[in-house]
Amino acid sequence: MSKSTQTPDTEDHTARLVAVGRNADLEAFEGLFRHFGPKIRAYMMKRSADRHLAEELMQETMMTVWNKADQFDPARGAASSWIFTIARNARVDAYRKSGRPAFDPSDPAFVPDGIMAADTMMEMDQEAGRLREAMGSLPPEQVELLKLSFYEEASHSMIAERLNLPIGTVKSRIRLAFSKLRDALGERS
Amino acid sequence: MTIHHHISDELMLEYASGSLEEGWSIAVATHMALCPECRRRLSQMEAAAGLLVEAIEAAPASAQDNASWAALRQRLGKPSSRGNVEPRPAVLPEGRNVPEPLRSYLGGSLDTVKWRALGLGAYHHPIRTSDAATTVRLLRIPAGKPVPEHGHRGRELTLVLCGAFRDENGLFGVGDFEETDAEVEHQPIAEPGEDCICLAVTDAPLKFRSRIVRIIQPLLGI
Ligand SMILES: [Zn+2]
Image (cartoon, rainbow over all chains, first blue to last red; front, side):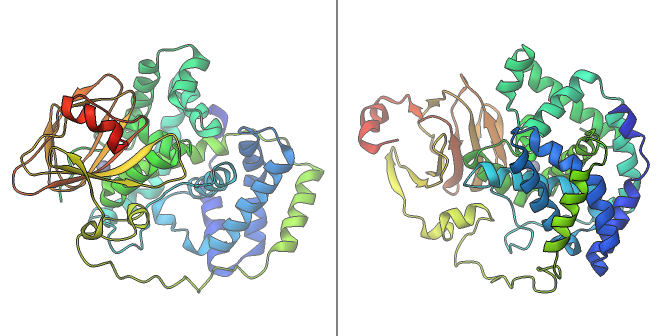
């Protein structure tokens, strides 16, 4: 993490994504593609070494980014977070026929966020920076767990086997990592 | 609705990373639809994942990237989904409802569920999924009555949809989420007042301990 956590250009990508959403800005989109495309291809390769499929899933992800950029809300998170969810869903859809059951915010039975939303929005840019810092200061063994989970979709038992750890240790490291991240964001956990 | 029992970090991480199979995900995502607090934790996890994807050291810009951009650029039309967000029928079925994604699996409200007797006054309704590794169903426990005691071979997720139950881990009301693991035996008892309806997801057929239920279990196919 250390090097990349210092990269201060998150705001640029978020601004680019907003420009794509508002004006279908092709130049901004190319900037996003040059930055995220190779990383998403590498993310796809972590699940399967099939280069051709990785390229296809990356293109599909970026196509969705182009088509749905108007749904991106910078008050709710950074571009990297939103693009991750699109890449993850593309990968899950490619490997599992049932896809990934998800809640639907436009569902009338959905319980919307409370009044805290206004506060949350003000803090959003601060929050991205704090999270970045906190990720950089997590102990390496906790970062490794998060990488195995997010990059490879490894289950807890797979991680336990791979790292030769009891499954209870894997779970408590996960809890520890997220309670540190939440602390850094100033939340009780 | 005040929710007291939430999704653990471990389970939420599996959902956030995409590794959680369909059956478990139905319970997790339906709780999230009811719980802004868990959605906030989920978005923090996704933010962490976004940073990790950004941290991937991809190969330096190459001819492949140029070819790849050229190919994608050709396909870019006018952004296709803009302005025509599909109109969604914002009408819920009659009766007591559950949110998505569970509602589509049920195909209706809780009042149109076709219940099958489980014995001892309890009922269930199996939910079909394409995930063979889990059993997903609704359970209906009569007010004030226990669920037949059961042990698990693995994980069990329970989401309360109606009424409430109490067990060794506390009181679970509407929206509350319980995760139990291998070797745990618990004795849920529905609170008096109204029947308790839960979504229950398990990874192995429940092994009911009550003698009567054990005898009829093969007949009921549970
Ligand atoms: Zn919750």
